[in-house]
Image 1 (tube, rainbow, N blue to C red):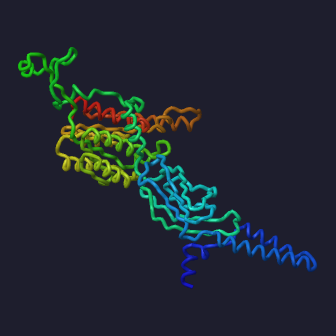
Image 2 (image 1 turned 135 degrees about the vertical axis):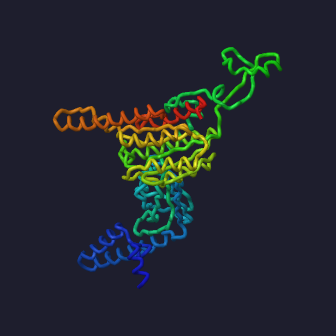
Image 3 (image 1 turned 120 degrees about the vertical axis):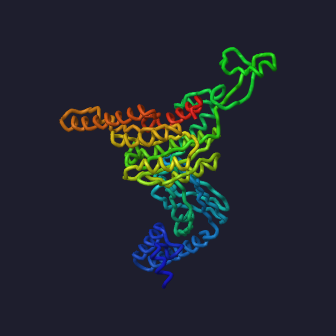
Length: 450
């Protein structure tokens, strides 16, 4: 009794084998034969019942047992928000006869996808794989529910239901599409398609790379006179961009990041761009770190190098969310000053839209710029810019346009105040932010500003 109550509470079937609609139709047809009058009708009906019972017994014997059919779900450990991936089901049968299988699965709300609806023909003693596309819709760990198989034979009179507890899940991380695309284009020397400008890496910068023979067109200031006198011909120093420097991304998790920019909030575009910048910097040999904050510090990852750093950043970013609180710039810059004393490139993702917030921000960013190279990535609000240019007539449209135009003007004044204070400002829309941030990083590195 207790087991039955637990099964009902868990919504699990009481029996593993149950009749199908086809068997019900067959029984109904056999029962209708009893309406035939006379002894002939009774004989025909009795024979029909015997045939149905025989078919059911034969069907039961042809149904595979639960231990003779296996199902596995293979999913990627992580998937980027809005990125596509593949989920694979592997069905393995040890039963010697062919069967038909229908797959059921419970998807988490943060994963867009569905198991195949059609029945699959599984041959005897065989294995079959089915792949379906999935898309990440919400960051964080997305646990899957149990799987179930509904197994029938070609007759389809009985069905066996097998349930597989599968406590697996997918971690939805910030979008990796930009990172993968950047790496692919870099291998193919086609970075211009991603909006990344080609910059010379050798012959510029501050780190000594070696000596070589002078060729016409080289900067005469790079001549090494001691080496020239020793070899009896002109020798030039070759320099390269200095590596193993710190690149720290500061991410504003305040209310300005909750606004939508297309399908996802602006905050998701920020995380994707910060992840791409960190990947480029780490690949180039720099150390990468992170500070995320709203009204308090939400996350801090000290600068480190290599793939381990990117894994730590991706894991940390997966647990971040934008909140409806005002950002506390003081706490972010205080942590930066205490934990990063050596000069670093600080890329600050935020949006300041009023003069009061700009004054507070400039006060802290100006002091940080005395030690670090600070780049402020101001994220444009495309909806507000479009609202400032009305496309319809009427008093309500004009009122909205005037209000949006005033906000745009205050934002431009705030950004101008930052530039006058000597802060490097990058004013870009979310759609072009990733390439613009990488370009600015490469420019700073090539000019030896670190």
